[in-house]
Image (cartoon, rainbow, N blue to C red; front, top):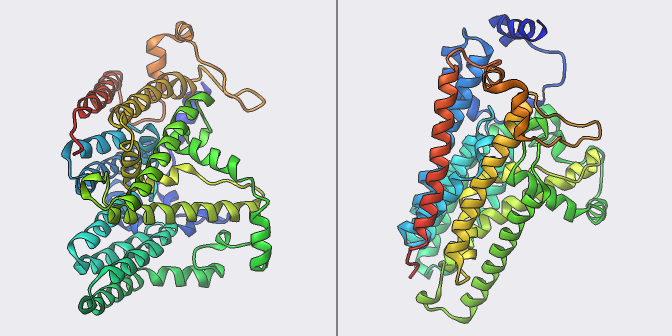
Length: 451
């Protein structure tokens, strides 16, 4: 039949087609090369396999790489809160986010950017606590970041602000050493990554890519005037929604009220952070502080600079394409500082730990709903988009139309041969077990003593 014919055509794509040059504009030409260098040996070993096998392999590699964010988050959060249980809570919240898993499963360089940004965050925290000997190492990681994703240029002003803060707070005899460490840091970053940005300028006339600047000549006043016309609130709503959950390039989404639950939590955390800042000005006593002011400055600088970069992209998209929006899944690049800031903000309230545990449970519920009532029904043909763009609702009674055997058979389409029914069911059980374990961990963290 038609389905089988298409499956066979996919499997018969010749290996030589991998190296053929196309005639269309190469969008991926603007992607920095580090991730692709990192994955090239694996691709070379798997080059002779079918396309579904290679896609599965790289999805698996990306997920394994992304999992490094969890231990890095634990180490970073423990440094900030000086409490292992709260560090576990931060790690559990990150691991429970379904969109992070969706984003990691894409074959792309954002996962490596997330890991390097997480390491960069940890090193910046070490700079303000253990001295500027970590500045050159942070510069090396910054260079690798800029060679992974162009938007990682947002980390440059963050490191500048942190270095300047260290100079301001240092004693007179230490200022020169800090300046030299900062020079070494930025020299390292330039040495590692500058060649690629010069290459971009030679190819497209822009250091990032042609769409990172107005497509037509505009003065600064014209750009600022256009910025005033951008609908920033809808842009923010779109950013948050695609950060909470977005179903790949099928443009799937969940119920609108589900997004509002997480938006409310984000607003609550922002209010909590504001309270923390006010308390810091009123009292310098360490026992009154949920988070050290230096740590708050570092995390705020890193996350704030990245938000500013997304705002700039939103503005450029509005100017060049008439669409004032950006992609919320980019925020997973800075997920470690984001979740630590959210945790600190929630802890400003008496019921902060309970709210944090509730957040993990809400992500668990979102994962269960999105997987079983959106993704699986959509990709097995039980639901589809309506002509106006919306998505039909799935009802459990629809399973009677095809049965479990046919459902599993559809899930096996264009998958590696070893993804048989027993494998699918085993992985599904492990998925449920691990997801429930995160909820259990979050509930146990309620007993944490935040001192």
